[in-house]
Each structure stands twice: as structure tokens, then as C-alpha cells.
Image 1 (cartoon, rainbow, N blue to C red):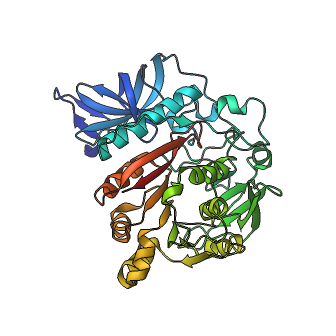
Image 2 (tube, rainbow, N blue to C red):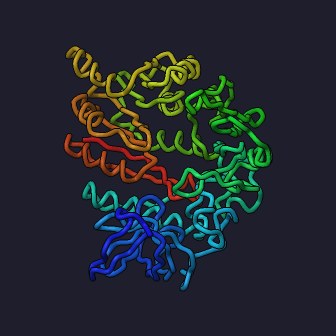
Image 3 (cartoon, rainbow, N blue to C red):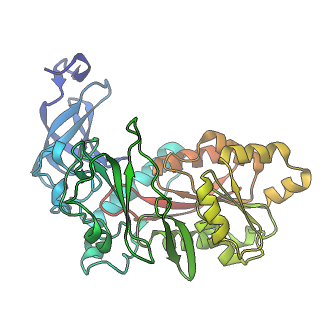
Length: 437
């Protein structure tokens, strides 16, 4: 029997517990790679299905009054957009606890995946920001190592993969929504050189994780992170790699942040260049690149508007800012600051002279926050700085919509929006937005 926390009564007073199987009609998509059905009036969030299907699903959580969670165990009526899963390790014929995570849309035809992502983005903007949007999710090309069929089925694109390590030293991805390691024989989403190099059949006793990185230049890197005496993951030794975007080369640590799709860095570099309102851009203003990493998006601005543009890139990771300083070294107007974005903006608002505030109000701000978004404090500080335009690069549609709504409170209006399918066969979608007053 389940614990008392795992049992809830439905709207007719009937109880349900984890492990109960229900027949459900799936109606639409929700954020996070899950889908919506209803049972006796109660919302049930279901994985491994898609709208239009009738499925048999097993409850995994029945502790919430307003909704339950379930995992599909059998498709009774398939949707026309269902396809054989691109990864056998995540397919429906496995028990849900044994399905590899990381390809939660792999059972859905690629074009319809993009439509579902569009729906999630449009719904978030409407609910959270009151904005009606017809934005399309654009496909992007796969890289030079892709096989002929990769573009058609959304595989062969991932240049960075983390394998987790089980207690016995075996490696693999986590199961979906779990920290259970699942041994696998292939990595279909991975760049083909990365997949060939991945040590899927090797043992790593005592390690915390194994990262495989396929940079633009040079060989595939395998980074084994050991555990300390408290079981925490140690940082791997610094390993220099080089990434190429257009005609520009970026140096960074193999363990540092870089976009994971083979074409993502160039796609976002071009999208930022394209979306900036050139008429509102002032090269002499106090332009900012916030959460700047190793300088990719700052470089996009400099390469479009010239090396005399003033731009300060702000990043909290000191190793990344060291690389950013090197990557932007030939750009006369570029500077790099190691700081948390909220602390940097606080100091800007507190300490700026009237002349500095005038340069800030003429500025273009590039904003590329983590998946959780910029958040209220940073948005309020940006509102106080009052830049002329904000280019927001987002990997989470709900966080983007929330921050757009917060920016609206400071008078900023969404002017343009593009979305890109930089994570095929997953629920993730990348967006680039332009906001101004």
C-alpha cells in the first residue's frame, strides 16, 4: 500500500494511490515535456504520450489535491504524429522506471514537436504576459559530423553529454524524472564523433560523472569528475578547447558553458545581430552583455557594429570572464567584469553619475540568464537603469514570459520574437526577444 501522502480521493470520493493504472484521453501539452489529461475532473500530467491519444497510464504521484502525475505504459489509441522512439532506451516497451531520460519528445514526429513547443511558448506568453503571439519554432541545421538522416529525425546534434555514475561504477543517463542510472548502448542525440568516443561500456568506480565534449576544433574530450570524501562532485582539471562561430574563434574550458547543439552558437550569434534595432543602437552608450559567459553574444554585437562599440560583459564565473577577456581582446571598446549580475546592476544604479546614467539610458542590453530566468530583482534593477532596448535570450518559455511581464511593468514592450529548435527530441526551446519602450 502507498503511504498516506500517496493517496488522494478523486472528485467522486474514490481513492487512488501510486501504481494505480488509469485509461486517459490526452488533450494538450504542458510545459516540461508532459501532457494533460483529466480523470473524474482532476488534471493528470502524463509523460510519454501526446495530444489526441488514449493511453493506459500508471500513477506516480497522487499527493496533490489539484493534480496527479502518471507515466504511460500502453497506447490504446495512437495519435497520427506518433513515431517509433528515436532511442530504444527511452521507448514505451520499457517499464517507465527503466526508460532513459533526455529525449522526452523522441516518440513524436519532428515537425509536430515544433508545433507543441510553439504552443507552450504562445500559452506562456498569453497567460503570464497577456501577449498573443504567432511565433514559429524554426529548425536549425545539424553539424558537419551528422549522418544523412540526422536532420530528418532530430538526432546527431548534441556536442556535450554528461553520463552519471552508479555505485558499481557503470555509467549512463538518468532515468526520466529520477536519479537512477540507466546503462545504454547508444546516444542518438549526440554528435556522431562524440557518440563514437563515449565510454558507455567502461566502468568508473568512485567517479561522480563523465562528461564527453565534442568541440568545433580538435578531438573529443572525456572529463572524469571524481567525488570528494562527502560524495560531492569535484571540478575537473582545466582543459582548453576552441569553438568556431563564423570567422571567429572562442577559447574556453571544456567543462565551461557553451551551447550544446552543433549549430546553436552560430544561430544565436546571428539572431542577436539580426534582432537588434540598429536605429536605437548607440555605439558610445554603456552597452551591456549580462550573464556573458565567454563572450559569444558580446562578440555578436561587436562584429555587427564595429570594434569601437562600448560593451561591458558581466559574468559571475571568474574562469569564464578570463576567457571572455581573451576572446574579446582585439575589441577596443570591450571590457569584462567578474560579478553577479544583481550586484553589478545594484552598483550601477547606486553609484552612477548623471552623465553615466545618460549613457546607460541609451544602451542596448543583451540578457542571457540561466534557465530560471533573470527574476524580479534583476528585472527591477534593469528597469531602474532604463536602457533603450533589451535583447533577451531564453531557454525556458515560462521564465521568459514571466520576465517579459515584469519588464512590461517598467514600460518595456515586446517588439520581436524568434524561437529556435535547438534541442530536438526534447521539450526545450530557445527564444530571442527584443523589448523596448
